[in-house]
Image 1: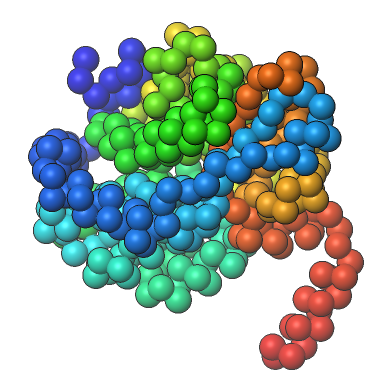
Image 2: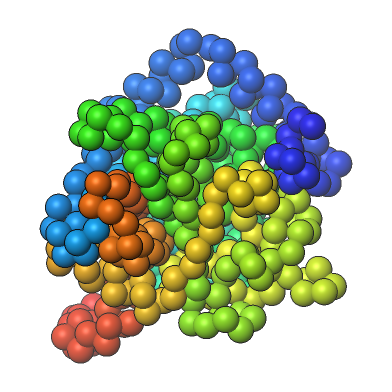
Length: 404
């Protein structure tokens, strides 16, 4: 069925949004076949975003673990520091094609909000970004940068004050301003056609990996590992390999602080099928269908749902899901920094943490590709606090005095 992945996906939205979604779908189908559109998209990826991003052999980490070879797809070297810029460029071009003058977005970790504000400045849109108060507090550097780009950041003060609530606020804005506004949704979630559009734009990641790993090793990898919140970075790197049955695909969820409700964001095995925010998928919800609280040290994985295509890939067994704890994530963050000189986003460190567990169990002839979905600049304050860095705290106290 169109707009579905097995039983998942669909378009469950207020009637007044149906024309906007139908228009987006129609314009996207036209743009896919438009050579001029595709040429401009590729040009901006190359000259503005900085693609292709490198595939780096993690020699030191590989030697340390004495197992499989580990390669890192470094999406953190994109402009704005993460994979998000890719689908933001694509959607902004679609918005311009539809004659929209305003972009709105939701953001958790701030990377999608930052990327949206960036393309809005580049392509001449006004921009509003919705962000939960909890996420604003832990991702203040990105909030500052979004505002410098000319966008307005609106704190979301209801619900858990995190990503789910920012999505709801953005949808409300879209309903009220649909005529001149495009909702630049930030992952492979939401009503059709968003999961398909964002997957297709992000699929450049996997195509690059396939070409790069064949050049380096002369063969495909045995494993690809990526963190999964909504799922845009993971689907981006997995898509080109879905039909390559020899390549095992592993999505890593946020195990958080523990197994109790509200301590993690693991949709598998804790989630159940429901319809939320315009699409059918797995969600962390109670028996009445109310969304449960979630937790992750990383704002980008602190989300109760998962993209509908991933729900289908889980049920069919094509993608395996694992989880790691906040503690394991911090250790992976430190390990990658000290062995390879790469400071990953805390989201990406989830994938690194699982790779560190897996690699020693594999043969040295096997190959793992880890998607480093973003870099760790944005997480400076979270990591410094989590590591109880007294020097950083002392600096902040002294700096506040000078600031005042």
